[in-house]
Image (cartoon, rainbow, N blue to C red; front, side, top):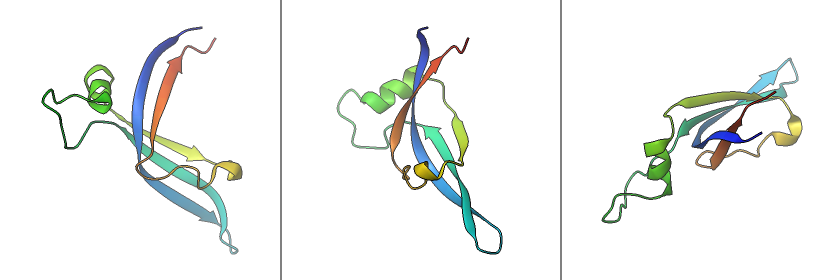
Length: 88
């Protein structure tokens, strides 16, 4: 299997969800958006984020994380590569 596409995304929001009278933390919702540089360009106007913005699809991603071991692991502003590989 080979990677079909790589996107670079940034965490824009982490929303915590709580459940029941004890306010048990049940999940986090991660909202991500594709990257682009927001200033401080060199003379070419390009950097890795803008290269991804130019050649990757634009978009948003929302994921619900229910694994307690992952709670708090994703922070606003963090950037991640997402590799798309065909699942057979």
